[in-house]
Image 1: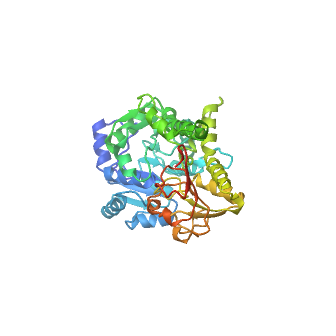
Image 2: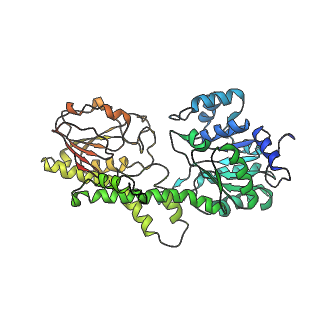
Image 3: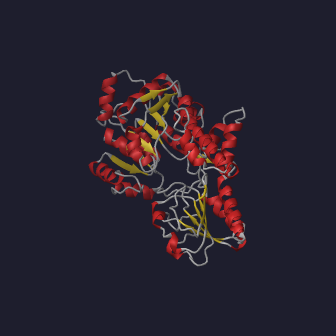
Length: 451
């Protein structure tokens, strides 16, 4: 590293001098993982410091970024920002993590953390990134983990691994956890400060450095917590809350027919009381966050968590609930499911986001196929080559032969469907999004009942 560059951890210099060094590019930053969340984070760091190396093991991603093209779609403002930052030299990308690690003073890790087949945390990508950082770690460096991890990972896994690989003593470098609090489609806005930033280090100096950095990166408050494990818990607790709350709404939706009321109406009115905030029911919970985070906690505690485990089971049961309603209502029209032709609308876990990880549509389609139905899957934003099922364009679905439709994902493109052009259908609306259709259709809305 050039003599003009400085480090932040354990350095006897004025706080204001460190801030100036950070924002003037004298503190080189490396961001490991340039996916949907990592690339926007690298871009915001580059806006701040003018000196960021982005790291991704996919050379095609690296090549596109260095050409000024964002490989991440659906993020307002990101395309122009990447083009500008690369042109001015504030951001470059490499596919060799150790090269970036050797020159950086701040290392930010935002690689995917997923689950194994038996639902244990899979930290393989994190381990690889940390080992690469360790190979180039220098005294005074700060490592920041933004990937969501099981509580205790920074102190019990990251710090010891860095010590072992680098040969440094534990007081020579910092490790902090600073959870990403972003959503697809608004990543730049979120990173720049839509919500308070949370930071917690494995020691006081790690926390201080993390706070200094994020005070500059975010225009919102920065909340320091007791330690890295607390910060890690904050992130997964946010997901646990949403999972349990959605499970409550979904369980209420499943008793709708017994109560013979509009459960959604009841929820919305109940929420006018300031101490009530029930979410809305739906087809299920997908994505790389909420369905995974409970298992990050289950894996690290000895105490059973029956409430959170039941919430997971309830949310995972919603695709089967939609199928059961379709089977039931088709039977009322004297059509057996094994003789039915069904269109499933939406395969991604969220509208407008081309991501199918843990999408409730996947087990729904699989169940329909297992029951013998002829299934057409429509998703206008997915690439046919990478979709988990063959996709059919909506205009190619056989209108005359269709018996049922299930809306799983409320893509904007579905708002223009002319339902009057279809013969009598059984429609199961998993998102309360289908427009009022002609009386010839039998429409059942999750949580509301017949429409």
